[in-house]
Amino acid sequence: MTIQVSHAHGDRITVSSGDVTLLSYVYRPDPDPFESRKPYVHPLRTLAGNLVSGYRPNDHRWHKGLQMTASHLSGQNFWGGNSYLGPDQGYQRVDERVGSMRHDGFTALDAGADRFELAETLTWVENGGAEWAQEERGVTVHSVDPAAGAWALDWSIRLTCVRDEPLRFGSPTTAGREMAGYTGLQWRGPRDFTGGGVLTPGGASTDQDTMGLLAADVPWIGFTAEHDDVDAHSTLLFAHAPENLGEAAVHPSHWFVRSTPIPTVAFSWAFFEEFALAPGDSFAYRYRVVVADGAWDHDRAAAHLATLAW
Image 1 (cartoon, helix red, strand yellow):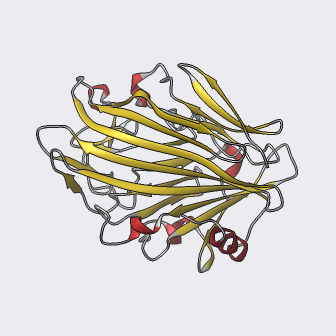
Image 2: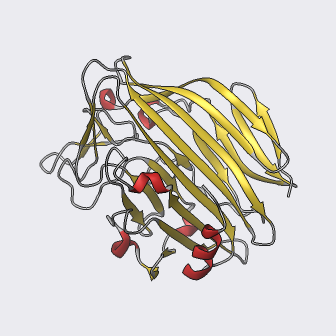
């Protein structure tokens, strides 16, 4: 099935199929620096046009569709919002801890009939203006399959430390909060996805049972929910590329999964333990998100993922 791409220069790139906007990649930063200004994907929709991303929900204004984050990075917060300062202080508003990711430019924008790829350069800037990291990002839309009712989005990151001392990546859990290891690529679902079901390769699961699982043991998970307003379900599948799970990865990944009180999934790269990136060193990860119509079970999810080559 063909796709169409439009570019509002300086603002966003929109990918559509027929009369449905599948996604907008918004690279003009939102105005509030407390929300950690950075590019994000929203809206995110199924082929039937059903919305599967949330934007600035009232519980976490800094949650914006699908976005790259780093909740704890050498004392800075590239997630947005309040910072977790440890068990004694909890969450506090500390504006000077909130960093940003600056869009520097696109090195490639390649649109075909059934595939779109962008390559982007970004700079991670701490709150005082110092440039800490250079990022090479890729976002690809592909495998639009009306028969399956699904399409796929791949997201890649290669991050290089340009600071004169190591960057230390962590999470609220590494700072003392139990089972709150959120960081890395994060999806926030719409309000009606609250209470949705969780899938794993082993079968149906729950957010509590999936939270913190090692990605090497569980390379993909799914999230399925029923919509308000329309009589429909949608399913999202989140999958690691094979190289994320082996010894070449800079650090083991774990899953951050919540269905209640909010619907969110993150590919956490520093859930339980910090890791350091030395000056001049780089790390890379690749991820896949499949957006599907219907209430899929784990067998259907596994079968569909097996058809998509990396």
